[in-house]
Length: 448
Image (cartoon, rainbow, N blue to C red; front, side, top):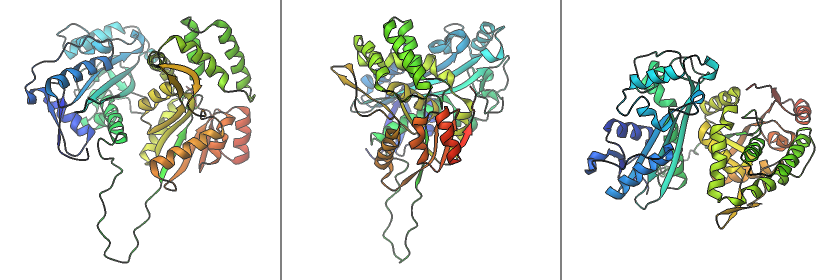
């Protein structure tokens, strides 16, 4: 499609939102227009129980009516102490015609008596894009924070006066941020970044990394060598999060009576030996997990894993790890998560933290169901370095990148860490701690 001129209908009557999304996406040649620009009066009612479902209802309704490329989004606030409320009902939490002030008043009343450390919350935005040929892309973004005891600030809208972004910020509510500051970190901005990455990967828009063709040289001076892409690799379980996602998944399957208790016990014994540093068959827990999934379609199994991430695993992020990611991104580095955990979980995490890519265990699907076999070797031990090298060569070209930093917690991460200019052992097991001391690597104890 290149950078040709293109009208994209935004499934909203709010002209300001269309302009805002256009500024966030920054796609040359795209002109984002509100529904009114193509004569559409209304959209189907938003009856879904998820942000993605409601965004898809709006996108498909506008696409069916217009035939143009369409972009729709749905967003809201999820508060941990309220079990994820107000969620998809954020705009009408107090009542169907509720004002922002009424919604905030009800929220604070519901949280009365809840201590500060239990008032965690996040804004979530899901975008659905449908191109002219009917291709659909789904992008998500989120902003973690907590709910203040009382409103502060005169800017923003909705719940901004009581939402305080995460600890690495300065304690202001979003209503106390300048508009440009808010747009740089908002859940909608994160979703826009995710969508643009997907559009670039599908070659539906030019990549920002693609420079215009250079004019023919008129001198004998050699052009300066292009700077190499600096990659920062993070392990997931035990490094980015203070937890093991496969263990959490087994626990959920056991609680929901999906996995037999005999299999749970065997995996538990395996996990104890693994944590003690034993070299074990890594495929054993995978076989039990995906044998349990055989009663589900692959899409339903994926939903179980992504729901686990959204409802449980994401609460285990180490704040220091997120600060490191933020620092490396400010330094212009490319963030890649390299994990043997399952693709649906790692994919959700990558979108959440704003990483640039990931390598994870991909399972074989036949006739819409998981078989229990992997598509290729899981990224464990030396495979982490091998697969990262293949990934980076494909993305950036052989010789055009370097592994600047690598973070890990288990001795199996050592081959990848040894290849990096800087290695960081995060709360390491004993074997990795010995390796780190021997190599002079940084050793950190990051708390949850």
